[in-house]
Length: 158
Image 1 (cartoon, rainbow, N blue to C red):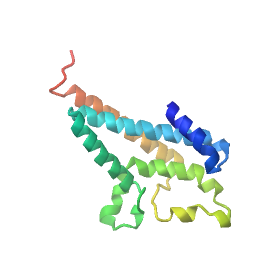
Image 2 (cartoon, helix red, strand yellow):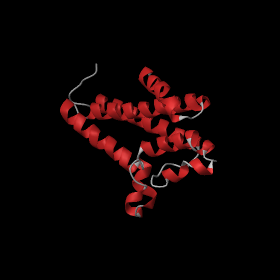
Image 3 (cartoon, rainbow, N blue to C red):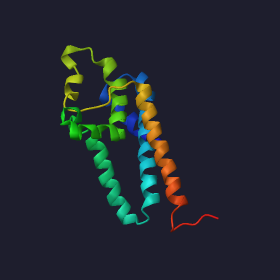
Image 4 (cartoon, rainbow, N blue to C red):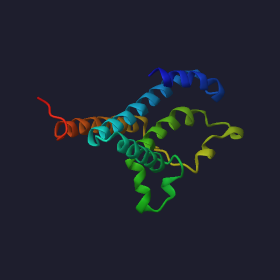
């Protein structure tokens, strides 16, 4: 996980947040990457065609970003579509990022950051709940990957 560390170290001075929250942001980034890798592993174990799995992964990750509130505020959408945010790990990841990097420092009226986030929907549940959901998401995907491999007709284990 060197790449996220290098990225954050290069980016951090430009962001202007205190270095004291850098370990928490790095931890959230690692968990987010692990869940993404878990989803990818699960789909690769389900679909053995490399070209097809890449196309499916693009659709899945765009869905996760869209449903997670990255592009629009899903909480303001009609109920029949707004519930989709709960199926996206991005919803919980961005909730963690917001609670660590924005909420504690959002007290300056001239530089209020929360106003910029009104058009997005991120989880406002507790950090522990968001973290538990992310870990559960990753574990379930890893277990499903094992099940898909175990019962696959293309691979036989002795």
